[in-house]
Image 1 (spheres, one colour):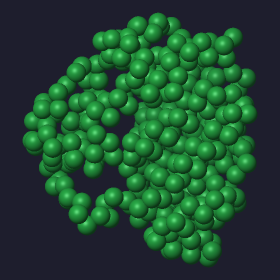
Image 2: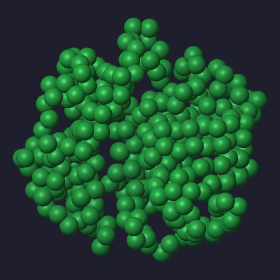
Image 3: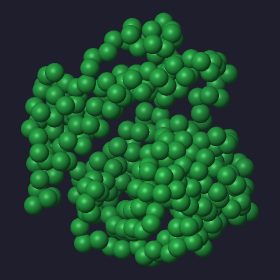
Length: 331
């Protein structure tokens, strides 16, 4: 793809000599980078290919409401994730498809003909992992629900694997983080990303726990309060908040709250807090301006020791060693 079409205007996709100002987080090392800008704002697309796996990470910084038009004769067969902000697609053969932030689905398009609708003044990000047919049949075929999806592929008809998009579970978020935050160099990164891509596919096609007849249905008011507590945790990740306080905010006892939170978001409240803090820490490390003690404090840890222990559990290396590795890459 050498050009993009936005509101019926064409713009070239350029290969910048270095990461552009404002896009200082190159999430996929050794990836092919394409960039475009115009009346719509800016777009940066990163692509990494190896063997039967292709990974895309695309960021859109939208200045004005617009529509991107996508047309490609090649088949799309892979996982699409709305990584940042909700987005609406109009896809030939499927109609209007809306993704909320943090939702994913396995998608088959025999040829791509779609429109992506963006709102003014927002930044959007999507994460895609594309596979070959053999890999999809191997893993999707493990589940009883795959029948119709595989039939549509045989008939070359567009299809979604899940009737309703999946909310990203904690396990899937961990896999995405491991892929985008990999500190390996080739050839290890090559193998590592292939393994993680397959692991992501495996988790996405697993039967949804919502199919369990013993799963408790959450009422709308409780779900609304769960989302309020989630936003509270995001805004107050520096503070220690007791499970009792969060439960009171949700209007439930601690057991019901923890079960409800995990059911709605795929992880417990403290797992979610841990995830937020590690994201913050990784962002500060990539800036390369702060000491480990400063990063620990800015990530909500009162003890450097407990921060290092948590960081190592998440990234499988110490923050100090990651700082050294990233500094070597910059030099």
